[in-house]
Amino acid sequence: MVDQERLDVKGAARRLGLDDRTVERMARAQRIPAFKVGRRWRFRPDVIEDIREGRLAIKPALKEEGRK
Image (cartoon, rainbow, N blue to C red):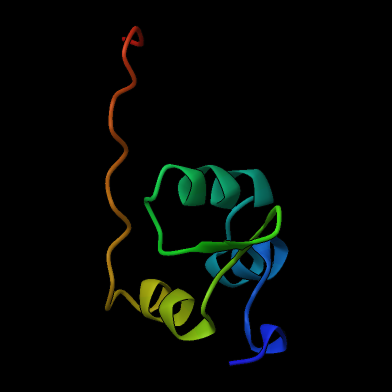
C-alpha cells in the first residue's frame, strides 16, 4: 500500500473522535495498532474503522511504575 492510503495522527484522531495527543500516546503505548514512517505515526484506515465500529478493542492502559 502507498503512504497516501494510511492515516496520520490527525486523520485517525478525527475518525475516532479523540484528541491528536491522545491518539499519539495510545500509539506510543501500543494500545492501538500503528507504525512509524520516519518520525511520524501512521494508521491503517481499516483498523481505525474497526475500532470505531467496535469490531476491534483498544487495549487497556497499563499502569506506569511510580504512578498511583
